[in-house]
Image (cartoon, rainbow, N blue to C red):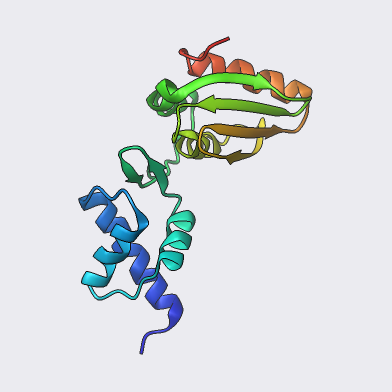
Length: 159
């Protein structure tokens, strides 16, 4: 009998493959697909797997994160952020070290993942909901630099 860790690893590989091959809109659909292939799965285990894999829930279904790249220059950042720019609606300051980014409904998680992956030193961390992201910075100077950088990269952001 395989260990729980091995089962989890195999299930996560299957989830990655299934999300690549199928449009999945609900966790229950993913549980059914996994069970049909013989993987033990519950809604709770799938929910944890999706979170740990960095999967985003979009209007069009679950979406795997883009593969990490060793190239983290501004040109790469610009391309990555431009891909999500249409989802960003507003950027607001909320105190000396917190930015609030308002997105289209259902897009906050994907935008937050992209921000986390930029590796920008101004970003301490992000917390996303359905259409809102809190971006923590070290201080006011970093917040101003980040806001300026975001406006430069996300040209469609409302002032």
